[in-house]
Image 1 (cartoon, rainbow, N blue to C red):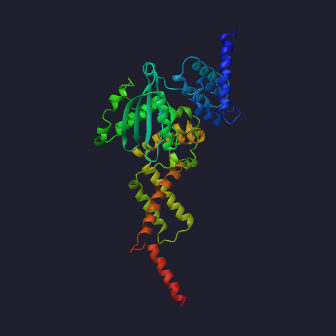
Image 2: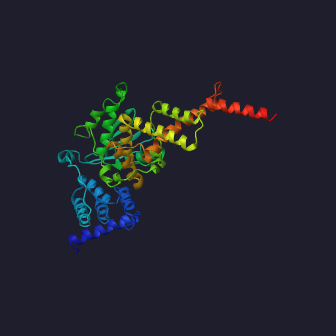
Length: 396
């Protein structure tokens, strides 16, 4: 008969083989390997112990950060594997980042909670589910629909069988065309509580019972702040410049600032293009660049800056769980710059973001001008018209 140690070894080998079956390759680049493990976490048949063992073989600070983020919710063999992996990394000179102490009593009181998140669209609208297992079978689900500007505008608490939950999730993902991802319930809870606090008083009639419904699942007080776990997951990425390539991701490119706030800067750029002054292309771009920098400094601060930071945090969290590790790192690095009050006016990503905002307003206005006949010409148009008339006169 095999000893307990042998049985554990066989189980571990089976778990590790499952990772390989699902596409994890130990020899790939550290960033890609960590992103794959993050995406596989929570997959049926994949244990946190297997994830921890794989991370322990990746000599990279992000691997240690992910292990630290996993540890507070781990128990039994999974926790032991996490500690072993951190020790192995320490032997290779990789120090574990310091994590904030978890409130042990609150965590114990909220056992059995899990969460699912959809990505946020351009208006920040997203679906948030928090589930709690019921004794016997099934679960209770707190469902919320939130938006970055409007706050919480839909909430419900219902009892479901797990089969029903899976069917609802599949249908939602089919209609939306994007997957929901497993999430730390604390992140989901903060998103809902923060959205409720931002809901205009006139609209709270629809969701006024939110805290009462929440209390049926969660005994802890509603959080006022969140130390977002994505910063620990991507501790190394924060030191690097966020790439402008992040704007290729629809979840980021669709984010918008209120057009009314952007309009005056867009008009200033349009004025430079139509100016009667003869400017070379470099001179024109220099002046446009100055407007863009001023717009970044003026608009990406205060409440708008906070909204963008939270969008980047949650979007980075979503990217990490859908296998987009590089994009997640860029999003977290950009969010950290806003959080830390860093200079962002000349950052490639923030420049690309603001130019997209301004370009959309300018394109809309130009389309409007093409669609409607105008009786008044700009100075540049008047000069071109006069020059064209002179040329026709000389040609006669």
